[in-house]
Image (cartoon, rainbow, N blue to C red; front, side):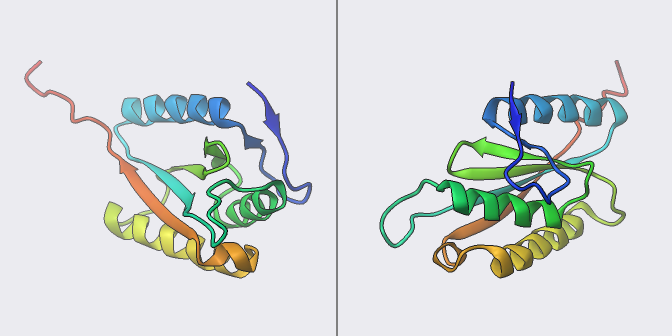
Length: 141
Protein backbone atom coordinates (compact mmCIF):
# COMPACT_ATOMS: atom_id res chain seq x y z
CA UNK A 1 0.00 0.00 0.00
CA UNK A 2 1.26 3.44 -0.73
CA UNK A 3 0.30 6.87 0.42
CA UNK A 4 1.11 10.14 -1.18
CA UNK A 5 0.33 13.73 -0.37
CA UNK A 6 -1.40 15.71 -3.07
CA UNK A 7 -1.15 19.00 -1.15
CA UNK A 8 1.68 19.80 1.22
CA UNK A 9 -0.58 22.17 3.17
CA UNK A 10 -3.21 19.53 3.84
CA UNK A 11 -2.79 17.61 7.12
CA UNK A 12 -4.08 14.44 5.50
CA UNK A 13 -2.35 11.63 3.76
CA UNK A 14 -4.17 10.85 0.51
CA UNK A 15 -4.31 7.11 -0.01
CA UNK A 16 -4.42 5.19 -3.26
CA UNK A 17 -7.44 2.97 -3.94
CA UNK A 18 -6.03 -0.20 -2.37
CA UNK A 19 -4.89 1.55 0.80
CA UNK A 20 -8.13 3.53 1.09
CA UNK A 21 -10.26 0.39 0.81
CA UNK A 22 -8.00 -1.33 3.35
CA UNK A 23 -8.55 1.50 5.86
CA UNK A 24 -12.28 1.48 5.08
CA UNK A 25 -12.42 -2.22 5.96
CA UNK A 26 -10.49 -1.65 9.20
CA UNK A 27 -12.74 1.24 10.26
CA UNK A 28 -15.85 -0.73 9.32
CA UNK A 29 -14.79 -3.65 11.53
CA UNK A 30 -13.91 -1.24 14.34
CA UNK A 31 -17.34 0.41 14.05
CA UNK A 32 -19.07 -2.97 14.04
CA UNK A 33 -17.27 -4.04 17.22
CA UNK A 34 -18.24 -0.75 18.89
CA UNK A 35 -21.83 -0.98 17.62
CA UNK A 36 -21.70 2.40 15.92
CA UNK A 37 -22.18 3.72 12.42
CA UNK A 38 -19.59 4.83 9.93
CA UNK A 39 -19.99 7.35 7.12
CA UNK A 40 -18.47 6.83 3.69
CA UNK A 41 -18.35 10.13 1.88
CA UNK A 42 -17.88 9.84 -1.88
CA UNK A 43 -17.19 12.62 -4.37
CA UNK A 44 -17.89 11.38 -7.88
CA UNK A 45 -16.93 13.26 -11.01
CA UNK A 46 -19.53 12.91 -13.72
CA UNK A 47 -18.47 13.41 -17.33
CA UNK A 48 -16.86 16.75 -18.01
CA UNK A 49 -17.98 18.80 -21.02
CA UNK A 50 -15.11 17.25 -23.03
CA UNK A 51 -16.45 13.77 -22.20
CA UNK A 52 -13.66 12.84 -19.80
CA UNK A 53 -14.58 11.07 -16.58
CA UNK A 54 -11.05 10.90 -15.24
CA UNK A 55 -9.64 13.49 -12.86
CA UNK A 56 -6.27 14.92 -13.90
CA UNK A 57 -3.49 15.59 -11.37
CA UNK A 58 -4.15 19.34 -10.83
CA UNK A 59 -7.89 18.70 -10.36
CA UNK A 60 -7.14 15.80 -7.99
CA UNK A 61 -4.91 18.07 -5.93
CA UNK A 62 -7.68 20.68 -5.67
CA UNK A 63 -10.25 17.98 -4.89
CA UNK A 64 -8.24 16.39 -2.07
CA UNK A 65 -7.23 19.76 -0.66
CA UNK A 66 -10.91 20.78 -0.49
CA UNK A 67 -11.89 17.40 0.91
CA UNK A 68 -9.20 17.70 3.62
CA UNK A 69 -10.68 21.07 4.62
CA UNK A 70 -14.10 19.44 4.97
CA UNK A 71 -13.34 16.55 7.30
CA UNK A 72 -11.50 16.03 10.57
CA UNK A 73 -7.78 15.37 10.61
CA UNK A 74 -8.47 11.87 11.98
CA UNK A 75 -10.69 10.92 9.02
CA UNK A 76 -9.14 8.90 6.17
CA UNK A 77 -9.22 10.31 2.62
CA UNK A 78 -8.15 8.81 -0.69
CA UNK A 79 -9.25 7.29 -3.95
CA UNK A 80 -12.34 5.09 -3.74
CA UNK A 81 -12.07 4.54 -7.51
CA UNK A 82 -8.80 5.83 -8.89
CA UNK A 83 -9.25 8.94 -11.00
CA UNK A 84 -13.05 8.88 -10.68
CA UNK A 85 -14.26 8.85 -7.06
CA UNK A 86 -12.58 10.38 -4.05
CA UNK A 87 -13.63 9.20 -0.63
CA UNK A 88 -13.46 9.94 3.06
CA UNK A 89 -14.09 7.51 5.89
CA UNK A 90 -15.80 9.57 8.57
CA UNK A 91 -16.12 7.94 11.95
CA UNK A 92 -19.39 8.74 13.65
CA UNK A 93 -18.51 11.44 16.13
CA UNK A 94 -21.44 13.80 15.73
CA UNK A 95 -24.60 13.62 17.74
CA UNK A 96 -28.04 13.50 16.23
CA UNK A 97 -29.98 11.29 13.87
CA UNK A 98 -27.79 9.59 11.29
CA UNK A 99 -29.76 11.05 8.36
CA UNK A 100 -29.26 14.60 9.70
CA UNK A 101 -25.55 14.07 10.29
CA UNK A 102 -25.12 12.63 6.77
CA UNK A 103 -27.02 15.55 5.22
CA UNK A 104 -25.01 18.15 7.15
CA UNK A 105 -21.68 16.60 6.19
CA UNK A 106 -22.74 16.29 2.55
CA UNK A 107 -23.83 19.92 2.42
CA UNK A 108 -20.62 21.13 4.08
CA UNK A 109 -18.42 19.17 1.68
CA UNK A 110 -20.41 20.31 -1.38
CA UNK A 111 -20.07 23.95 -0.28
CA UNK A 112 -16.30 23.68 0.19
CA UNK A 113 -15.86 21.85 -3.12
CA UNK A 114 -17.93 24.48 -4.93
CA UNK A 115 -15.53 27.16 -3.70
CA UNK A 116 -12.26 25.33 -4.30
CA UNK A 117 -12.65 23.08 -7.35
CA UNK A 118 -11.60 24.34 -10.77
CA UNK A 119 -14.55 25.89 -12.59
CA UNK A 120 -14.67 23.09 -15.18
CA UNK A 121 -15.37 20.57 -12.38
CA UNK A 122 -17.85 22.57 -10.31
CA UNK A 123 -20.79 21.41 -12.41
CA UNK A 124 -19.50 17.85 -12.67
CA UNK A 125 -19.19 16.65 -9.09
CA UNK A 126 -21.67 14.81 -6.92
CA UNK A 127 -21.32 14.27 -3.17
CA UNK A 128 -22.83 11.16 -1.63
CA UNK A 129 -22.74 10.21 2.04
CA UNK A 130 -23.41 6.55 2.75
CA UNK A 131 -24.33 5.47 6.26
CA UNK A 132 -22.66 2.13 6.94
CA UNK A 133 -24.69 0.71 9.81
CA UNK A 134 -23.26 -1.68 12.32
CA UNK A 135 -25.14 -4.99 12.14
CA UNK A 136 -27.69 -5.54 14.87
CA UNK A 137 -26.45 -7.98 17.45
CA UNK A 138 -28.59 -11.06 17.85
CA UNK A 139 -29.95 -10.87 21.38
CA UNK A 140 -31.10 -14.50 21.30
CA UNK A 141 -27.72 -16.01 20.43
